[in-house]
Image (cartoon, rainbow, N blue to C red; front, side):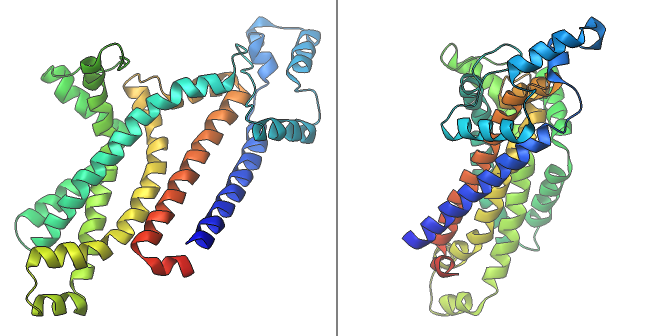
Length: 317
């Protein structure tokens, strides 16, 4: 297990390095000069001398490889630099925004697991009855609707029609716990809809595939109760592909949170990214994307560990 752990850690570190390198050069290919945008854009008509002074102050006049080495060295020391627009430390902005994005992604993941796995098992154990096509149709609906459509339908139903929860906004938990939960409900539901449907469909398919194996028929022939067969034999093996899919879904939920935060005016990490893209604020963009990549790699690392625990043969593969 330790060899497997060290190998996965090495691969994760290599992947992060490649992502950071690609990220740095890709961002500098974006059209638009940050110095010009800081001075007010073309409408402000700054002189070439003014632009040159700002570029020199920001270090943008140096060769790109030197900028890359300087930036990578700072990142390795834990320094993500300061915003080009307001000179605030990027790490401080990320520390303020990340918890708010996690407040969406973590409950949405737990909801997708808590509802998707039992629903998939229920549909599989009632295959051919009314519950199976009903659950499959609901899953197809949740999977096929884009997250912004789901979000707007939720706002229309629960906020504008029923008036149960506010349509948009954010209230810190420390100031008003009940208000925080009321603002949290719709964004989490919108973000969890597609992952829940995928988890349900994957659980159903995997459960049916495992239930058809000979070892399950042998367990039943020995007189084990159906509940024990499902829990001890079928579900354990059926969860293997589900764990992989859930790990990938967490990464996609960070991407889906961009639209959710925008629709519900949730001040998370992705709204910071959107505003920084408009001003070509390179350090903030690099910080946000690098943090998202790090979270994605970390989630996949944990997923691989869970996979190895469930199926020990993976450690030696």
